[in-house]
Image 1: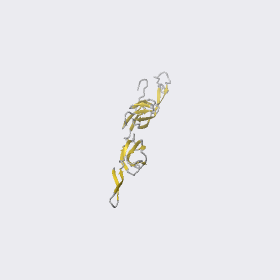
Image 2 (image 1 turned 90 degrees about the vertical axis):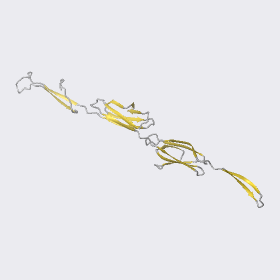
Image 3 (image 1 turned 30 degrees about the horizontal axis):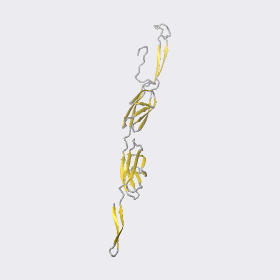
Image 4 (image 1 turned 90 degrees about the horizontal axis):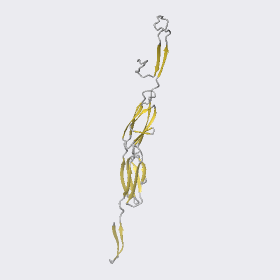
Length: 231
């Protein structure tokens, strides 16, 4: 601040001090409170800013602009912010201003993959799902159809299954897998019995040898047919 004195002089050199004036300037605008919270998950818009100005000449106008989208927010408490570069400008009643900038980094994308093993036979219930994950903040959980599992789930039947991973930041990713099974094996047989009791009968017109006829489908090569312990 500076002091100024007003003195009046007449033509005879007489003088009188009328007033002494002190002129001061406001203190610079500054942030008395600044809370900057980045988005918690990849491409999630849950970042927030809370600022409070001090100094200058109240009241204040706040302007926050997002460089990538061009969106402008005119408040000192702002939520639902995306990752990116921001410019903050605070202007007081005398149009004095304070400017700063900051960047909200976008977290790495949570990676979640599965490997599926189908059933080997119809209704064999030997299917399995194995999990692979990356960029996950511990502790985290993996839920399989609502059941918490670790790295895999085995002894599964055929069907459609939902898996969800959730990390410590609340970031989530889900996968829907289908476990398949082969069609049911079809197997039938028919029996032909000898027409005579004597299998050594020399009459060529008589059927003296019995036999079995087997019919099957949906068989995966190679296969074995065992009859009375004979392959």
